[in-house]
Image (cartoon, rainbow, N blue to C red; front, side, top):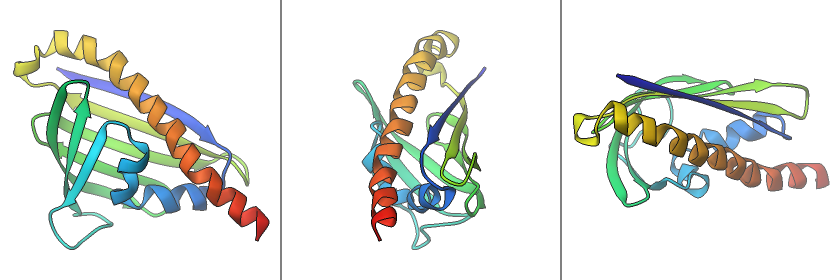
Length: 154
């Protein structure tokens, strides 16, 4: 059974500034509370084919999430395939909603392993993950806003 979680958040910043943060995969640990560490599996850091392991921690649970970038459209989208204990696809999509606002959409489709009770695990985890990921997008905004202020003051 696949669990799908979709959230969105509007950030008062041009798409170019939001993208400049989002495309730096190694910096996701700065604003994603559940991402503890990212270890790249090759020299590639951007684009389709980038492979990395993200140590992910939610409450007492820690997993090494093996990911591969499967889609990369500059200023618009990044998709990753989860290949570890949890399998699925996650996508960040950006859309300009005016010259100074960007809508960030986060879409995750995850298969929970039998070890986590599949349906029961998904029912418990979905609201928790949705809450964590909403917070993450607010933290992404907090990371981008200083760039907006710096650009305005230049």
